[in-house]
Length: 456
Image 1 (cartoon, rainbow, N blue to C red):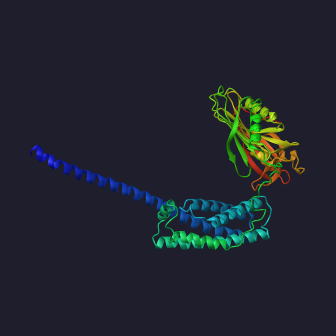
Image 2 (image 1 turned 135 degrees about the vertical axis):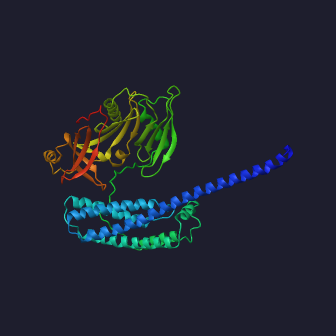
Image 3 (image 1 turned 90 degrees about the vertical axis):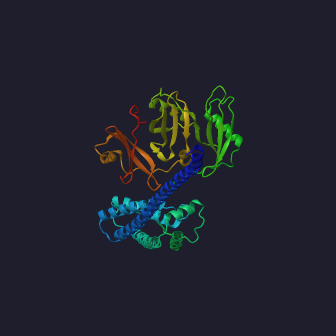
């Protein structure tokens, strides 16, 4: 074959090879997409069927709670309900329904979780049989769980019988929720929500629902101006502000409206700006931070704690006790709480961050103190310190016993005795209700090895 004929056949041959390659690549890409889609579909179907299964278990356990007369069985039942609710919530989160409001379904699960947790706590403390009000609440939740579970089973049967696809729902939701007017899956959940809305509101009561902490009343006669906020920020961070300039960086909204003030460093400082949040209501400093990355730790945690305490005293916050200390990337992070008499007020805590290379304060978080600190009418503890010593496990080597106000699981402030001690290399704080002696909270507080808490 001469060179001319060879060239005539070369180009078509290359085109054929290219087309075969493109076809093979396209086929491979299609296979990959199909595999991913099948995998996603399987995960969604699994999440849905597990949701139906967990709802059926919740119904069964609620019914069991109503017929059992055994304290031990009641504890096991409530613990199972709580676990099943948590799993059902996780299953809902695993379905492609982010754009679809499921407020009624989610509220039912939240109410059931609150009820189970509260009753579990009551029964575990030996508070006897269920009260009539508790029984009525469980019956209402049982009826709703049955309705919800039955509807989900029917919808699941439709999905299987009609060969419906969860991934189609996902694709439509990613496109902004369009093209879903006639989607059986979405219609089924919308119908389910409407049916749940028809039920009357469940009053879970004070024993079931978490309560919001009481906040102190903070409001001046009128909001402070931006100029006042800038001046407060300068004087609060710098003992002698000198030529430093402050400016507005942002305005915070929400429970505490604030001015976000930025203080630029002077040219000779070559440092990062300081950011400070000032309450518009009364000019209090809520939060402050200076970005810094120490390359070494020349101070130990105890020396850093002294810097933090001196900082609080300089800002007229003298009666604070250190309750937590930890080291993070050459930074010391310290939690301080104020005292009322001898009682530590844990809800009113502040956090201080100290650079351990030179002791510079680089962070202040005072939101809890700002929101909750006030003079409280504290009860006299019924239990004495000697009573608490008898309650503590002999395996805990006691170091401190002191009165402390804490917020329990349900958001209520209660007076406790704090027993702080060690078990081998671990340290724990255990809080006992000062009236009943029940163990409210146990917290692991193991600090760095070179630090020891001191009785103050």
